[in-house]
Length: 370
Image (spheres, rainbow, N blue to C red):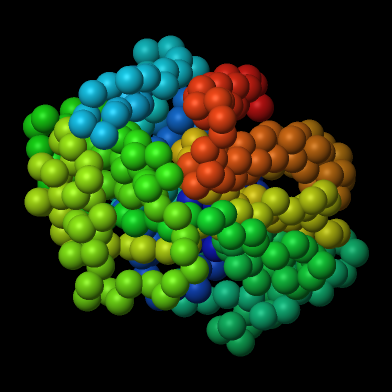
């Protein structure tokens, strides 16, 4: 088999690695000219770490990231009031690892280069897909036309592949919140994941991603106004962080100017996630807000499950149908839970414990086998 994977982010690269190790040749197309990951850092929960272990990639992620045993929920003054704890699913490894997106991209790039039968082309995407019954013919932006047995659309929320094969797919839903993300050197005092809550006015997270590095995220309600201009974002973010106590002021002084600022959105594609021999994975099929830190993790799981189903010996179309059936409810849980948590942060429920209860329920369910 030969597969075309559209998108060179975590979804596409893990899919190509998994397929390549199963004996499927994989060509990855990345529209950017270089390996330039978007964003600063991310957290990988116990189930995505289990999926990385399946791919033989857990050890370098643990080595280059920062291991966490829990998330500490803090009052505005920094006092810990609640802990979100999960258990590791791979014995002897951490239950959660936070890592820079550059470091994760490096790990996946190295693994892709070491996987026989895989190739990545930068500055290239797809312009048309034609179903040939027993395969798919693809026109590429470099002017070439090639034939594949399988096409994997891993090209994100605004997927070109999804628009080609499932044009009636739903539009993304705005979550009603804005997120700010920025990097900083890690003070020794910030030795764990700290989440400080100001209620509807916002939440801030301090997330160590390496021995000497962290990233800060800040969530606030989306008032629908224009985005803060790039040159003013650092000052604007520091101003928004002034109500927070604990270790937030210490980190705020060290923030770098690489502030990412955007509105949150969610999208869940109803079944089927494929047409013929073209299938969608990752954000192209299920985009989530970051409230339980499972966006990239779900994409990595997709890659493992897709390869398992293709390896069962049936037709490609049957494998893609089985893939959707295994993944839909799990991804629905992530998208809907995260979106509900986002809405509760803007308009809190009467019972303040519901937030922790819903988070705990979701994380427990996601610890179950794939």
